[in-house]
Amino acid sequence: MLTLLIVGIAVFLIARWLWPSIKPNELLKPDIKNYSDKNEFSEEYGKDFDLQENELPESYGENYLSLMARDPHWIYAHWEISPPKLEEIISDYGYSDALVNSRSVVRVYDITDTNFDGTNAKSHFDYDTNEDTHNLHISVPGLGRTYCVELGRKMPDGTFLSVLRSNPI
Image 1 (cartoon, rainbow, N blue to C red):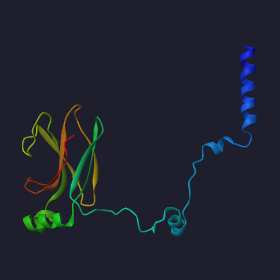
Image 2 (cartoon, helix red, strand yellow):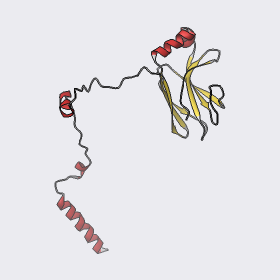
Image 3 (cartoon, rainbow, N blue to C red):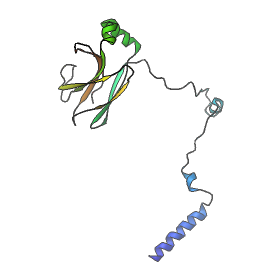
Image 4 (tube, rainbow, N blue to C red):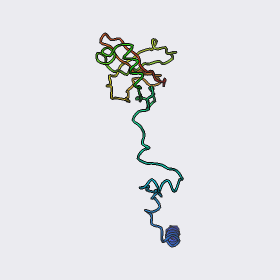
């Protein structure tokens, strides 16, 4: 046992003697450059690149509703409705019916073992949202189920107007 302790101390001392200039905290620091000037970045990469102008936009002007599993009990939906799609809904149903008198709703369908066509889900439930919401975490009741969601408007008489449909998961 004493021999093992002596060998361990010897290995430590030799390693410390071989690397005396390296401090343990320096081994963990990444080599990150801070480009405070776009010309400094351009010189290194050979491009005219403005760091302030290349931010991600808030929206892309596309229509999509994407659904993904977060875990067995939760799903996550995110969406975008383009202005032309919104104008199409208003022209089809009128401004007051399409926006003022209706509610924004995410409808969740259980489509397990179904070739879903929009009318033949086993069950569904609704989450009210608002026009400024573009994503939603949704608690789902059953494990091993297949779900699909639609973003739409629920009219005062209970009629659901589908605007976008997601992928099934």
